Image (cartoon, rainbow over all chains, first blue to last red; front, side):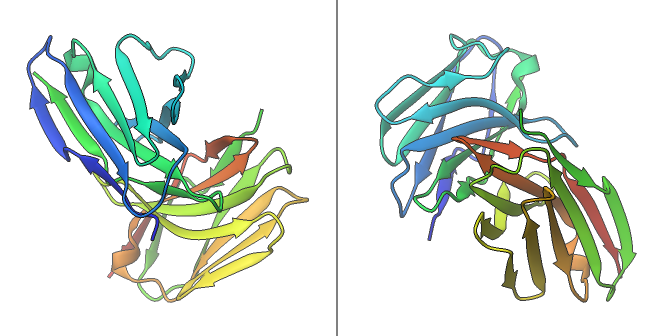
Amino acid sequence: GAVVSQHPSWVICKSGTSVKIECRSLDFQATTMFWYRQFPKQSLMLMATSNEGSKATYEQGVEKDKFLINHASLTLSTLTVTSAHPEDSSFYICSARGTSGSLSFGPGTRLTVT
Amino acid sequence: KQEVTQIPAALSVPEGENLVLNCSFTDSAIYNLQWFRQDPGKGLTSLLLIQSSQREQTSGRLNASLDKSSGRSTLYIAASQPGDSATYLCAVLAGNQFYFGTGTSLTVIP
């Protein structure tokens, strides 16, 4: 139980384009989902907290207009990286909070912007 | 603000050894503590979840303990195997936010 999927697992895009990443809780409902980015050999950096039906809460220093988050249902949250640049290349991971308070992570999405 | 620290940052042991990873947090008012492993280029896999009212959890060769009053948790790995090589992260849930440690990179040498 408590499985979280992400799609796509990896994506390469050209600078200036937008990329959408999906995060789904497959066998449970998640009122809260979290988005992280991770640079090589570094720990997770929380970008934003996504609550179903309301606006996401962004961490300090994260541009909300660049990283658009939509949590339209209890099983789906999306992160759209708008006008991507090479410095946005990173590993993006989502997680979902279950009813027991446990955290389940998706497998991550490797974004490369050329 | 809650701060989570993991010691050591890196650990290398020969196969078969028992080992202990440490996690400390500054505020004892936590809801739960969770241990994860992360393989290179992959997401996080949950290993053990300890609720604040519990003192330990066991799964196979893994045993995690929690001492809220001292702000510490340990992850004990018995009879380590090369497949245990990964980065291990602990996270505490406090309020409505998760706080992650910096991780311990474990290498088990065959």
